[in-house]
Length: 429
Image (tube, rainbow, N blue to C red; front, side):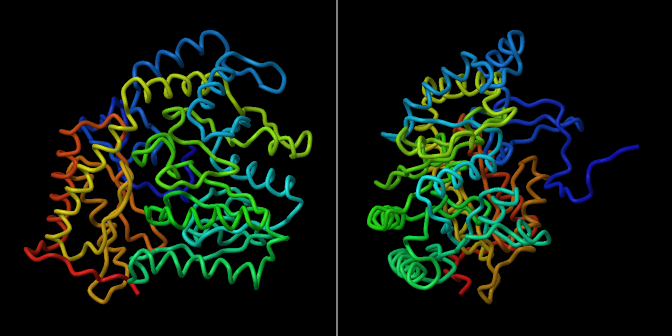
């Protein structure tokens, strides 16, 4: 009798019977408010009727049409529709299946186009689990330990994690930019550096928005040094942060943009976008793949982008995100174990900190498990595992946010002692 790998660690005991919108209906007969959305994947909610219909119709036409052998209309339309919402100048797309594959395609293009070997990543970034993507990931050692040697040519610089350092944001940004300049003087010369790779908001690294001024500082240095700037929008993209793309909270724009997760509401498809000029500098035959740009996934992607536009889901993410953040800030005043609340749009993180300022992973884990008892599904993240992240669907309603906050508050009350006083900032320095 076969079973799933014991290396897979389940965040909840829930077995899904069916799901709709913001709700998962378990085989146990319980109704769960889903603030995980498949780790930010089911952007239009579970089984949005328009996405379901598009996929169902496509399944009856052609399921797999390998797109370097024969082309199919869903991918052509998906390409066109993505072009309408991508940053100006990013007019050429390559499609794959997963975020990891897209990340690898992005760094391959950067190295080929520049003729330079090195990639600079930033502390806390998550870029995938394949060998190259894991080599670029610094969100925790669990993603890269135990199968060395990793890919060479990766250098890590400081991320402006103001709360961790106990600084204000400007001080953290100044420090991180100074450290990047120092890295370029001491470890990877600009003429050896192909690209900077960064998430506009850290995902697994702790749900930390990347300060706009830091992204703009990267853009300035990239332009001055002939280095490419790659934005990993796998988790922050398609309205998740209250802007269409996470980097749009700044005025910086990428040379290469990586997309996956929410672009097709749960169907596996990913992409990188660049200018035609830059994409053409890759070597012929360096892009491809059996399942990339799958016809059913592309059809779901077209439907997803339509729903996002027609239902105003980017704006809903902004408004409901403000509601969620306000509720979490109020909850924070009553629970000293919460050291920080942060996020953008419907991508919010709650960091738990012990009295001595150290990360409190035990409380975060207990709260995450307690939310299941309250019929609310959440996840943890962060290198220490001390951040609970809330990732509602972009279709979430005002009432559902209220319910989520009530259930999160109840989970907190079940595992920790509330306090009437405002929590003092106890950054883990």
